[in-house]
Amino acid sequence: MSVDRIRVQPIAAFKDNYIWMLHDGRRAAVVDPGVTAPVVKALEGQRLELSAILLTHLHSDHNWGVPGLLELQPVPVFGPLLNEHDRGSHPPFPKPGTVPLDCVTHVVDDGDAVTLEALDTELSVIAVPGHTRGHLAFLERSRGWLFTGDTLFGGGCGKVFGGSMQAMVDSLDRLARLPPQTQVYCAHEYTLDNLRFALAVEPTNRDLAARFEAETRKREQGLPTLPSTIGLERATNPFLRVLEPEVLGTLKARRGVAAGTRAASLEALREWKNDFKA
Image 1 (cartoon, rainbow, N blue to C red):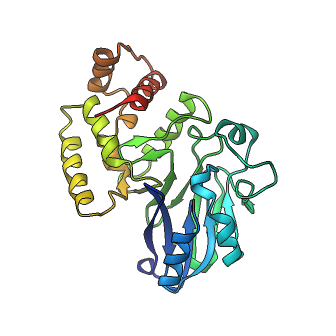
Image 2 (image 1 turned 60 degrees about the horizontal axis):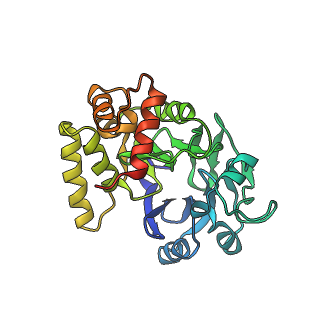
């Protein structure tokens, strides 16, 4: 099958979620369907048959659409094991054994491969704990497509619910080592808010200023800011730049934090971002 026949399409959900749909014009797979209706609308509108569901993590806004989709078409659901830490760390959750949280039919973990037979496509599974302990990313290596869920955002990263700051640092660093042209498909349209924060952290970063202008134009036209690329994130995302001199200097001046390690810098940045108002 030709690479050009597979497309990645965003399906908007809730206020700012993206459900990513891979399709070849006939069959489709979706990543992180937090709600059923917009996926059904996209499938029916394009006369596509659902063939698989992939879940990066088991927060409700990423998988509560699964039961409705399975009623439409019983398909494999690839995702992480629902560990007890993740079940209890982001309430409210349904009781054990109920959908939608216990909806993974094919549990996968780091180093596994997900084969989407209907699309003749294989995705590598990368464990990226931090936002949740069981969080995964999916990488289509030949095309350079990376589905990051809530670990790496455009210009930012997810909150840390599922592990230590060191785990999140390690996960972000692992993604940052991918080829710079790798396209980043994250699950939320948070980019402009993230970049406003990034500008407060690195006000003299010219790449960042240019990116903010470019992404602002996209949003003014009603376009997604995504996908990003790993190269762009390396150049402009403060959570991948935790030991850059200006980042450390700003943390010292604005937050009174002398961060000596990557984890300490990430923690200070994450705490600042949680309270940040542009």
